[in-house]
Image (cartoon, rainbow, N blue to C red; front, side, top):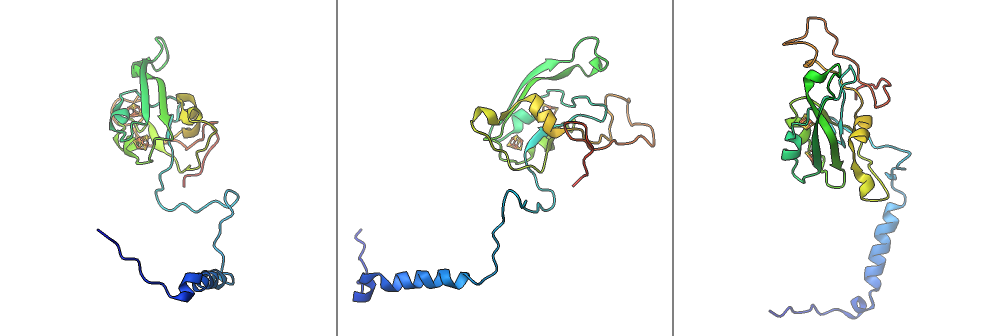
Length: 189
Ligand code: SF4
Ligand code: SF4
């Protein structure tokens, strides 16, 4: 197939009209209100249930909630999660929980913040925070390990208290505060 080139006029061949048109477009925007955001000093407003980086959370009694069932690993579309299942130490106060991950890794370069892991988790142990600014100097640095994921996740309220009570918790049981990885209280967004 042969494409016919359009015939250009003399003026068009000088490119002057196109340059003037481009300059006019730029000048037209100079007096208009600017909407540049001075990021990172000025943070964008995140609306509604914005989903950012996935993290691991602890219950209000500082227990790792994950029982390494590997459902999240199975369901994750880009295969960003890698879990090495392990067991709770014998004689530990919560040894009846039996399992917790020996290692838990999320590759933040692969993660697409879809939230499937949070949806599928039977323990409410993985939680997508509102943090989206994940940066690093190498690919390995962005493979977040269990300890880092727990620090980022902090403590979430727990309405079930699965490992403390059999069945429903007694009426009036507090669901617990939200805390960051260092134990400081966090206001819920
Ligand atoms: S948010 Fe989606 S992509 Fe990211 S770890 Fe969870 S399931 Fe995988
Ligand atoms: S985070 Fe939840 S779904 Fe994933 S292994 Fe732990 S308990 Fe299972």
